[in-house]
Length: 350
Image (cartoon, rainbow, N blue to C red; front, top):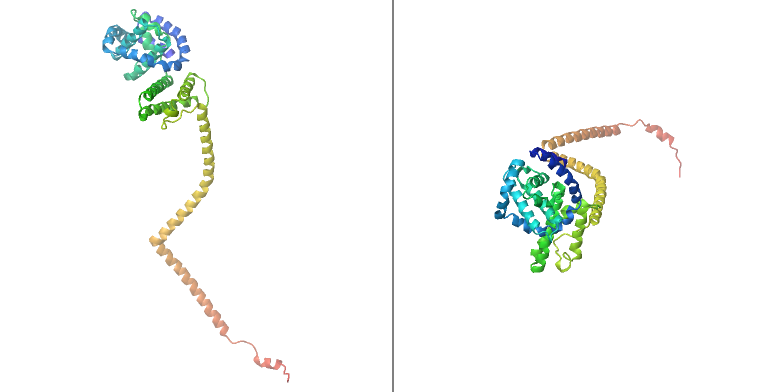
């Protein structure tokens, strides 16, 4: 909010600069209160969509373009694209000013806030944030100041997270509305099923913000969405779409994450124990394979075989030489005196 005030002060020149700064400071308190419940009104945005479409009609925008041009070019110093945005805002709020009954101020201001944040983001260079833009045009238009201040404190800059969450919630409800309409009015299951799958996809893209457990307006709204899908039997029974993933609660998602984490840890320990054994075996196998190829298909094999053959021949020659000497030794005459032997043998007549 302080950044918005500084930006506003630098963009706006004139005697009422101090007055506008005071105005923003005062409305900032209202904005913080309103922000805490911005997600709870998204389900009703579709009721205002038609009136914004009407306000974008070129013939209606012409009624307000002239009044917007002075503010956009002289006060904010922005391009003509912003004149168009200003004209749509005035035409949209004029309708609710003339037809106040039957519409919640929070809802039609909330939808305008979502649309304006989206529109300004899509313009080239995003030269002006929502708070600065709306505050400037509402404080510099005497003819429509009352109409514009109908949404005082409810039009403000949404940060990236706030805008994305609002955008996803809005698209979930739009897809869900289409799904229910197709189920009621067509027998083509595939035609309705694509919207059920879109609901599931969008829900999964945002529900992790509520895991393991968070209590805020976003998570409360997602819980309402999930309950409406199932208690209303829109995604079960005869309306069930098998291709659509179930809308798991934060508790169920957290449980699955824990189980997955345990499985990864256990598997990791086993693989850690097996890795050294597998690596050593692969190294031995690799060395053996390389040596086999070298011996079989290169000159290294021939050279090694010749070396081994020479060593074998040398050993064989030594063995033959030793054997020959042993035989020669056995053939030499003995020193035994055979004459004395006969004299030592006694004769015993029979």
